[in-house]
Image (cartoon, rainbow, N blue to C red; front, side, top):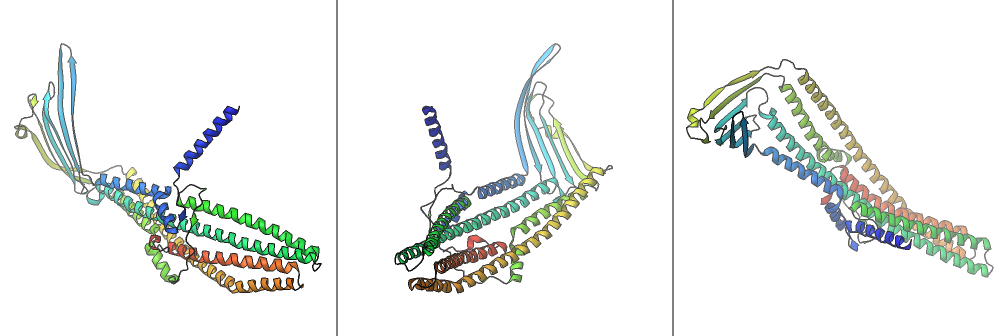
Length: 464
């Protein structure tokens, strides 16, 4: 049994070590710029968006290739009643497809033996009505790939902006929780000093035992508040590690303080205009709308007659062996036009209706997205205004809370007042100091959220 426990503990340790090794180590001292830089390099969401963008670029490169070339050989033993022979050939082919709708192919068999013969053939087709230019299959595939690259670029931008904003919020919330611990610890020191003072005065029979017990209970409650705040600070640090894409449990020293923003935000109307110009969501909708408009145009184009110019050449060597130069003069060629009219248009019309409905709903979604962006900007302004009001209130009341505690302590020293006055003053000062720290952090994060809401690039924000 002991051996099994030992093996199990070793196995669990190896698993824990493996999990820890998969997450990168953050530096012992961590600034906000370092945290953002690490997140942009290692966060899984950013890396997934980068992979998607690289895939879209590869698909675009594929569609930019207009030709395909292949060569090969085959050999077989052909048997028939009374005869058998070895047949073989080498062959090659070149195919061309252009965005203008032109399609061409060239096939050649330079060597043939047995039942195979040398062969050369070429065909070319160019549309005059249906499927030409931007409405050809090749052009559609190329333009769709270009749209996809533009969409992936915007989605990568969104992923990076979200990662930056998430790290900023987590970083400054971790700093806030750390500073709140200090506030609670100062409150605990005051509570202990008050309790000690009441115990001394009880020994001198200057206060009752009720005041002493009340002060001691306040110490116990404040110690519990400090413990809860420390746990909250640890949780905030873990959230920062997750926002960076690092492993939880690390506890670096955060070196940046919450900065004060001196520049004023744009007025609401200007912010709305900037947001509608910059937000990547609208740019993504524009690319998707371009795709849908082209799909609808192609569906409507397929209802038209199909008129193509066609040309072809075919020539086969009379003898086995290598292809002779005379095969070009011995071949047959044809040049003409091909005209087709679709009689059963049910499938084509259904595809057209599908494209039309998709375009209409996508256009409505873009309009709705504009309203959501407007609400994002308005909400960011409301949050900023609320934080500024809170900062003003707490700033005005900080000196009053300190004076209240000072007067309560003087009354205790002079034998007047009660322990409840000390407790109320201490609690009030702690609330004001905590609220002041929260308001400063909320103002900065509200400004960053406003920048994000209007589509400003957060990588251009200075974090000193």
